[in-house]
Length: 341
Ligand code: KG4
Ligand code: ZN
Image (tube, rainbow, N blue to C red; front, side, top):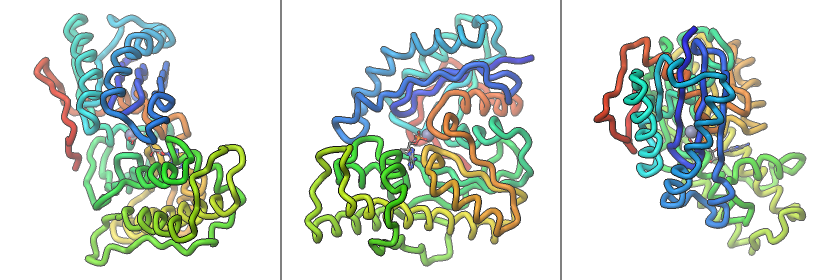
């Protein structure tokens, strides 16, 4: 029985978790700063770092207490090294280094996006490989092949905005609050998603890349043309705004699923993975499952607690890196632009 402590502070969630033997979650504590950043319609880096410092202690204590272990009982400490906001990442990296130093435990750096992919393995156990993984979050929209656990080969990524970023920006424009994804998901339920004809541009050079800045601009132009005012009362959102966000959501999901299917046809994987914050989206989950049925492949989508940022996925990825001999030393630094694959 081996326990790994995971620490995640790359954006606006302060998280710590203990995972046993790569697959069993003993604790998974997440303190979201959404309420702190909501008035600004997006994450304010300065505020995020400050709140990570305040929240880290209690979050860590809760994760250890819930897991029923002390630091001495750990096999290793895994931490998100990047990518993310440098001031936020630094908090987690420094705390992980301190624990590793004081308790003489291996320090294991983890790539945040690898963590999102490992969330699927953590939740579903054995996944037929090679897998094709679509990682969709506020910071990333990337497609990877996963020939074996811990190996990620980048096939394509967004050339501009991440899909989650587009959700957040459209929500901000319409006064729907932050984060925008959950609000748009909820408001789209039962709305007419054919009301506005949005399309997401296809990348024409044959690559597997995505692009979401065009649809964001299309929404902005539509809002100006139709003279749509930001929503004043979150409990009484006008039908035309609900139809608008539903149409936007359908276009984004169509582009994501199209990329997934194209990747599957080109690379013939044994399974599909859809993960990251946007994988919480009701329509994306439904359409990814439908596409997988069409391809005759199993699709693995983590449960909601593991799609958005959390530290259990970092601990799970920590096991993989530990087995591959990846270690950090006390010189480990936060890497805001850390590449993967
Ligand atoms: O993975 P995550 O927690 O953080 C990053 O690594 O970026 O993803 C957060 C993103 C936000 O953009 C948020 O709006 C989006 O995930 N999101 C959703 C939903 N829930 C969260 N987007 C669409 N539908 C949802 N239900
Ligand atoms: Zn994330």
